[in-house]
Amino acid sequence: MLLSRLNRRYVQAHAQEIPLPFRLMLSPEVYQKSVSYTLAKNKLAEWQDGWDTLFLLGILYSGLLPWLYGQTLSHSGSSTAAQALFLLGLGLFFTLGDLPWDWYTQFRLEERFGFNTSTQKLWWTDLGKEFLLAIGIGYPMLLLLLAVIQWTGSYWWLWAWCCVALIQIVFMVLVPVLIMPWFYKFTPLPEGPLRERLLQLAKRAGFRHSGLQIMDGSRRSRHSNAFFTGLGRFRKIILFDTLVQQLQQEEVEAVLAHEIGHFRRGHIRRLLLFSTASMLFAFWCLHWISSKEWLYSSFGFSSPDLVVAFLLFSLLGGTISFWWSPLANYFSRRFEYQADAFAIASIADRSAMVQALRRLNQENLSNLTPHPWFSFFYYSHPTLLEREKAIIKIT
Image 1 (tube, helix red, strand yellow):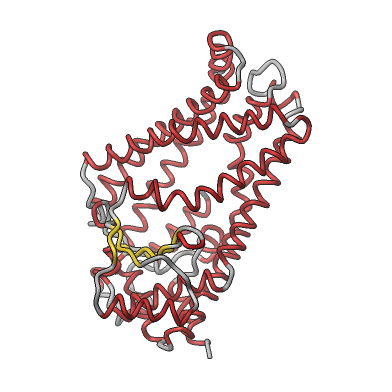
Image 2: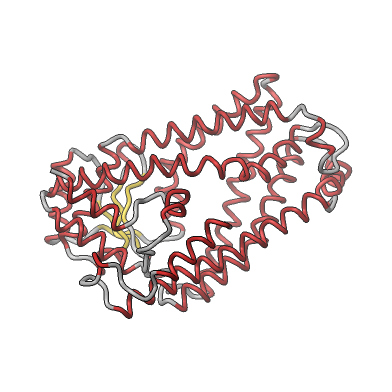
């Protein structure tokens, strides 16, 4: 919260004058709107963080968790199925706690700045689908994980990690094929100059894929993006329809070249390895702490229980992983510079990359003047000014 307030004051101090490098890029009206958007998001995030902290502390120290777990055991027994249902139910309960904030963000903050295009019906329909997925997929996954733990003895943490890592890889294949189409409509990129330009780019870059598709992101938001999803022959290049609408063809090509750069430079593989290694460390930590009686007594539980350890670790783990985020973001920013360099080498057009970045920052009302410490701690991407300076140095 200290960094958030430092960032707010820093943005306010630069609010009256457009930064010199961007005076020809932005009108005063657009710059002021981006400042207002940044400050509004900052203020809302502070309120939400405060609420989340109070809500979590209230749940942890009210005695509600031991009571709920006791009720579960007394009515449903200590079977794996009952324990999985207990964890799923609490997960959904905590999700409901953030629901008002999600609604306000979509239909008040995003609406005020012209980004929201979703309807109440669509938003609630999406929420219903997510709820069904949590039950239909989340519950069997929890059931499998707890069963593996029960079967594998003292090395359960290692087998549990293998199970989750395998599920993660399977989902990388299944999500774009089975789950994402449940929320978004995907259509092939129409024949024409843009499609031909992007296909030639993928061919030059040695990027194998199963197709170029447009996603109807504009049904929910005017924010734009591009990405690829899936593995092997299931890999697809996805463009938001808003991206195609907002950018020129050479700028779309630059954005896609940047995304391909992440793949060609091995960033996806490294991030996946980092994620699985972090997960292994987390499971080991859970194994180590699950036998500590003070963990349970501190929150009103009478005796060690692995399911309770899972619950407490998931609720409190964010306070530890929070301090890892600057390291992860540091490497993420390095990857962004490398992907920019790959894109420029692929399209041989430095100006297209710069114009694409500028237009995306403008269209998304990105913060052009974050405090250096705030961006260092929280930003997974370099600021626009940092990226432009790096691009200029590319030979």
